[in-house]
Amino acid sequence: KLFQPVFSNPEVLWKFPEDFADQEVLQTVPKFCFPFDVERASRNQVGQHFAFVLTDIESKQRFGFCRLTAGGKICLCILSYLPWFEVYYKLLNTLADYLTKELEDDLNETLRSLYNHPVPKANTPVNLSVHSCFIAPDVTGLPTIPENRNLTEYFVAVDVNNMLQLFASMLHERRIIVTSWKLSTLTACLHGSVALLYPMYWQHIYIPVLPPHLLDYCCAPMPYLIGIHSSLLERVKNKSLEDVVMLNVDTNTLESPFNDLSSLPSDVVSALKNKLKKQSTATGDGVARAFLRAQAALFGSYRDALRYKPGEPITFCEESFVKHRSSLMKQFLETAVNLQLFKQFIDGRLAKLNAGKGFSDAFEEEITSGGFCGGKDLQCGCPFSE
Image 1: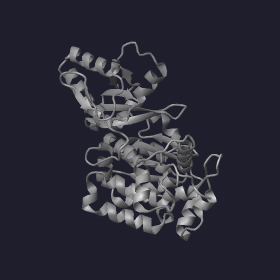
Image 2: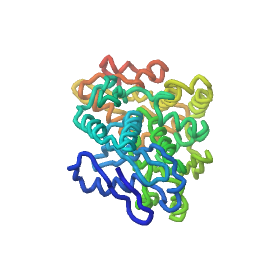
Image 3: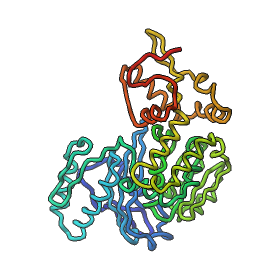
Image 4: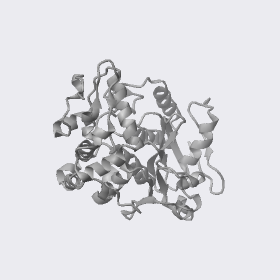
């Protein structure tokens, strides 16, 4: 539980367990819990949930799930390595209720039970107390609307054209800033948009909401994806920002010095756009599946570029991947093979294949069902021909 005085730094009022002593976390977390200009924005803050991310030196993400009270003075925060947004947001409401009613025993029992519980398998029930139970989420499936709060808020807040522009900018690994006055919408849009890159993952600086003391990150010379509360936007614009893509969620406007969307093959873009504009896409996994289909169309032929020689590791041939394609697709893939997110994807696939692990996931199924490669199915463990 944290408190934000008007003219000084935020303070930790209470923590669980009480002997938690990681000084770096205790100094960092309070600043992330109040990531706005306190003098300008506190009075107008509505009670809301949002989630920040701390990334360690090994690129492991730790999530901070927050519940900010109206007026922006008190914040409850749960730190976890598990991306269980809906579960933790609901739990924060229960904890806030206990605090309001001064039910200290119930509060401690719930937290103790959660803290000591081993990580449950997906889809298994977890009972923390009489008032608090949940089903462990399956984070391997495609996100669905309305169950997935991040994707739902993103799809409602940002129109299809801007979603496509942002997707294209992420595929070109740009410096991207997203802004909003509402923290819940801001962080949902960041988490929701990166989820649509699946089976790839954003490999660069990723800060769903940036606290005031770290605003210089916006001047970084490398790619980033950063969320900024609108109360800090003027301070950011006063810095020397170069080649930044900026999405204002509140006005639904995107400014970019690039034409990234026109660099993607037009048939892939128009198919994706048409799917997203259909009413039937707006519920279930329709939105996530539309983007997955686009990723399969763009990158699914990677299978045809895998090379196998008896007694040697399976390798990936960039030249083969790029050639024999339409000119626009070829142009895009020539750029794509140099992207960190694509390299990471290929390295991950090769590591599994060379470890003798057959695998199947939603992406591989989409490649097969959409006929996006001419090669054999990865699951069968068949050799790949020259």
